[in-house]
Amino acid sequence: MPKAPIALTVAALLSGCIQIPESCFRLAADSRLPAWFEHAGRGDRADLEVRICYFIDSSGHTMRATLHDTRKGKDEHVVGTLKGSVPIRPYPQHDSRPVYELVTVGTTTELIEHRGRNDLFHVSDDPAMRRLAEEQRN
Image 1: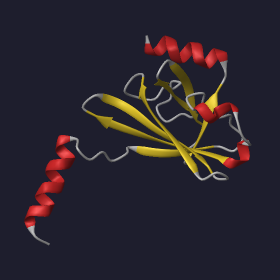
Image 2: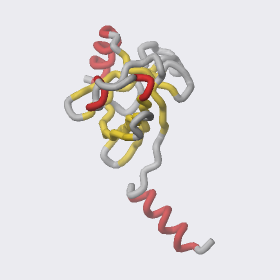
Image 3: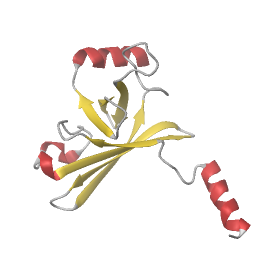
Image 4: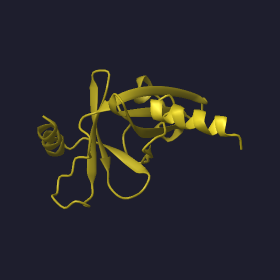
């Protein structure tokens, strides 16, 4: 392979022109939809899939989410910011689960819960965990 394309790719990655997700997750079937989406209150939940990916770039930690309506074949995309640079751990053990992220899209902040080492996430409505997460981030 010629050296020029490799050099251009490396330069693009280093400059932040190309973003590679740190990690991606899909919404668990038993979770409610994040309130970031206009579609969140409409349609059959079984027809809606959500995928989020976390990124680290020069502006900090960001999240990109896609809501896909499998029945209509339509997508809705949002971009949000994460509060803090590491996941929120309610228990002091370094490798404990669940872990949480506070993610804000526009004026709406959701508490995202990662229960295990898998590709699923839940939207948490636990008020005690929400308070703890906000205290840790302020």
